[in-house]
Length: 455
Image 1: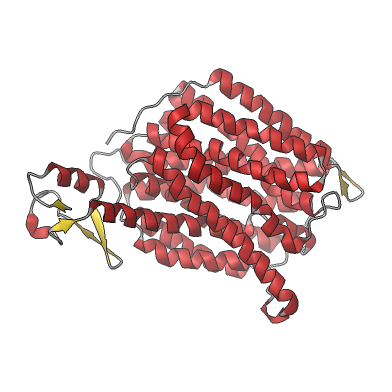
Image 2 (image 1 turned 180 degrees about the vertical axis):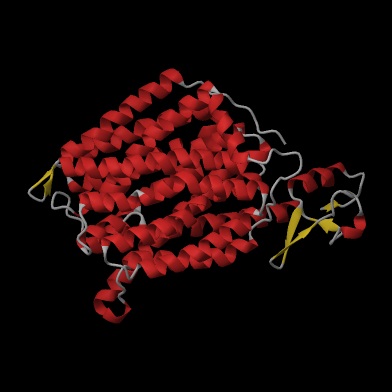
């Protein structure tokens, strides 16, 4: 227990780290700045540091669970729904899948600016999820290509900022991000799995109970998760904007980080690898349900969660040990090497069990490269622009990289499709070669610079 007194240095340290404590859903300031030690404003004479830390971690974990349950309910299987049920072409569903990246090019910078300078981060997240959930419910009933474009574009503009803001609010409220972030972020992976299994269970039950079947069930389920998260987000640790002594345009300050040579190299390689990530997100579902592999659409969501189970293992158990010991460069090198290994198995194309088992490599691909990348950005970003720095890397990876990758992967599939049949071997040779080049460039050119963010 830590007593609140003006001469107690341990309380002084705790107050700087946790200026707000949660009381039955309301964030109550522990003191009233600038009168730092005015005990008249203190709500409770004692505070348990472990209690505060665990409460924050629990809420941040729940946040990650729902954030990625929303995305995981539609992203892995939407292309199969658009192709098999709505009969969209590869270029059409490739463009629809690129709408989130398009939104992520601009929207996160706005979201980061709002959170860094104007509004508490948790309120920005909450409002975005509530509005986005309603739009997804409406999108479930849409069948035309033009209407689907507009629904998904508006939704993605609203949802995109939350991908960076959930990272930044976690980093700000964690004591040791290298050790703790992976264990918080892993709940996002669990949420992604829960969404996939929920969708599979829903579709399985709908076969014997037709009245529960809903057209566009993948979008409908995502909408429900989004509304739940929107409500719960207002109970996240209070994270107010930093206004005092800060330059007004936080995203411009974040962009100046690109003047550093190694950060620029890191950013360019992250962009290229992100384009190849879309070969997995956009084309794996059609590849697995093709006659070559033969996975039934009913079981597709559950099969694809193999990748997320691997993510849980890598993120919760390996990343907290590997990253502090090996550092960013070696960790990310291991991650980028896992990419061509997975794609070469896709190139081989069989047996089916080997292709399905190779989905587990996604855990190493994603965690050791992209999750480590977010941690790296947080360690070198100035404290007053941490949300905008996360938004910057989100623009590069989830925005420009995924936009280019979504359209590129759809175009590559069309190039190697004739008479309704796709030559999957040729399709997956493309990301295999490009990720090998990225791995070599990263090893040769990038030099790790570890500089903690100013406090």
